[in-house]
Length: 245
Image 1 (cartoon, rainbow, N blue to C red):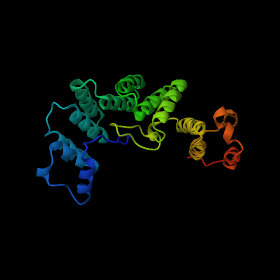
Image 2: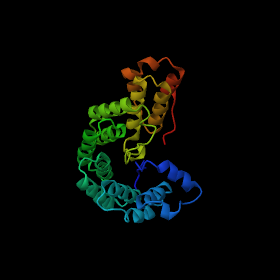
Image 3: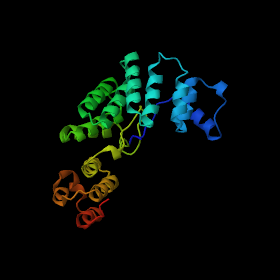
Image 4: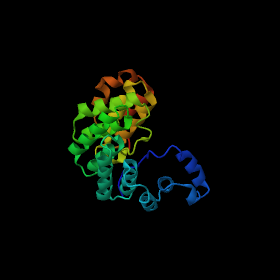
């Protein structure tokens, strides 16, 4: 099973489908194959979703992207990649499919290819905060810290909740996929501190320390935390010895 959790861009009537699904599946005759697949996705019945999507018209880039997401959820990266590529072939200007291809490359640690795919998604949809977040994480994996922070800051500018919520566009990287979680959460703390979101900055600093960030001197010197240094919570972090996870 892959360590991604997917937020899926489904049909406009998905809210209605979810409501129907709460008390059981909607009558099959009242739904299109795509809608049946969407309902199965809501209930995490990914193989059933793939079967349903397979009954939809095959010349639809959105359907291939959704099928790819279902395969991705099942950990079948080869099949997911193939379906994302079919989606892109049908519609080269479909940003979610490019983003999802990036997620496959990222999962395989092909970070350069992931960066290329995420850049293409951003070119097609510049205001998608999650795409910038994903690109930032791919840069982070290559230790290109300046570029990573630039993308994280742009993601935050577009959506201040991007690191707390999931994307409505195809897929979003999970924090658990990041190898150096301590450094990742420290960088997020800097972003929140710069935005004067003190509670979240403290929260992510705690995570960074718990995950092995030990450079207390850096914590004292980084300018992003200047306005926080007199806060009792910040001082407590400097003197604490948190349990390493």
